Length: 638
Image (spheres, one colour):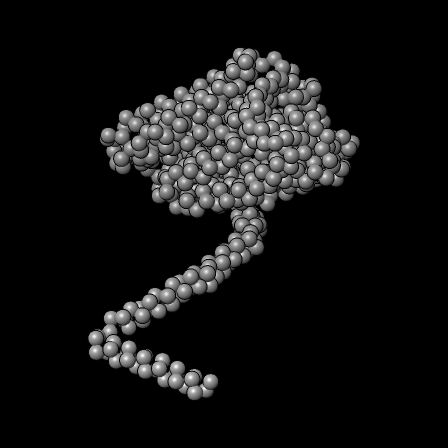
């Protein structure tokens, strides 16, 4: 085993070991520091060490990887099917691993302070920190397993462990309103997609005779089988990466702790679907129907998330819906034929979205509410958080020269080429759909990003706040460090080595500088200017009031949750109640009824056997008399 291969094997193993060890630690008792403080310190050490070790291994892998490498060994043979254990390493895997480990480390460090203290006092508020830190480590290990796996079954293991850990982490604090229900919703909705993902993997493995990714990619699959498998895989992508119509779980997941929102919505779970498609992209190129479906999903998701973000009052839900929208850009890039543009935006999004969520957590930690209507005027009291949020929102909106500008323009450029020149693997109309949706998304994103900044940090206070302030050092430093890649990572697109690691033949595939940039920049300025002008007319008013009757529609995300509840949840619940009633009254009724009949008959016979002696003698004589009489009558008749 080579040194690079060893790094790839250790990459998920280190946080996995930290997580399994952390699960052995007992939760702390409620209240102030006591007997459980030692377990808490051990959990902190394990969590931070596991994430730091993974980051060090990922950086070493990125530096030491000269060419794509794969190593595997047979794990299980099921007849003609072979399942292997191994790693498949390339530049894209190394870059994504660095992003995952960096965000995980930031979340582990940030959580130490965020989950220990209340917003205005020194009371310890989280007595279950050891399992929390361990579950983050397991979540990190699962995502890294998805990144480096060389076998579809091994990838599926990491995929499913992520789903279980996300459920546990979202529901970590069961005292938070809505957290258990949100966790259950996330688990069930993603499971719907995962059924398709599992079936797609099964089709590919049976067709190729192996689940090894290299064998699956090299096999000549039948067209129908390949198209069906790719469409089934997209169901899993829609669930994990919150694509329409399986996107509804992600905003509700905001009920969980803010650091978990940063972990799930930045470089880990939501990115897994995008990364899985890039891993298997040659299959999708051979199934243009699946890519066309992906393009439609991307355009709808992009605009749905953007418009829903315009009318939210909850700070975290604005960022959640923006994640849905930005994932639409990534899947749109895949639909028009550019894995490099999709991965570039995945990496920059990991930086600026993790930054925004952790900065939002600092604001919530200081003011004690998630509602922007209860904020305002925080710029002077929280200068570090304010400027870091400016960087994050600028990158989100695509403000030059921040990171999101270069990655988003890369997506729009390849979509424009596919629309105008038919360069994509899908029909031209898919290119037009993704390009126009992306352009409209630029203006809408700039509008809601500006609104968030104005409502949170500028203007006057809309509620009495007790001494808001920048967060403590353990929360402040992860925010400051994430601001660096959020601002500068886009410039890496000019570096040929970076472009080569994203499988781009030239830097031109990542960074597009030309007259075509004028239109997106103009739309950005238009969207930001509209929000600013509305706010300037009345700083006490919410710019979202300009939406008029559409505000309630956007706030409810076009009421798709209600539609799903009416079309899916109610019928399933009704069917479940009918099945329960049938089981209780028919099946159980028959069983219990036969039991009651047997019991009654036995009771009657027992009562006869318990008769007094005179009655028993009379009964015997009467019986004998009746038998004799019957015999005499039968004899006469004969």
